[in-house]
Length: 192
Image (cartoon, rainbow, N blue to C red):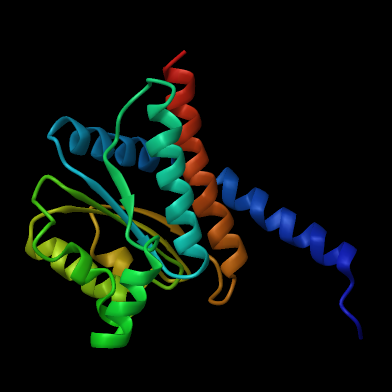
């Protein structure tokens, strides 16, 4: 039997509404506190993810970096480690994909820095290696995870977790983008 697009759309939206209704504002408050602590201590925010999560990382850097800076609201020193294709492909080709984030952090990450790791599974080898390095350097880690949360959920200071069935990438990535827009919109309103 062919998939009914109208029914599928209603179910998808219904599930998304349920997830939105269950966002913990205390988690978002904790994320903002860590962001502001990082900024006030002169730290840098590193954002990373693979695939759709890499796109979310780039979008987050756009919003929380240039988007807020150009409005003279707040100045986060924030970069996405997924944005430099030549660096990522060189590291991947030369020493393995699991090193693309770790090697960009190695020797640069400081204890007052922050790592925002975005991963649906929470178990991607390159995400795990970056988190382990951040822990070794005493840097804070904010996790944006999905499914069962994996390694990321268990090894971060603050976790924005989307508890859905494994494979529901769209819903997890939707919610991670909404987190970005909640934080961005909060600062926009605060800056008025």
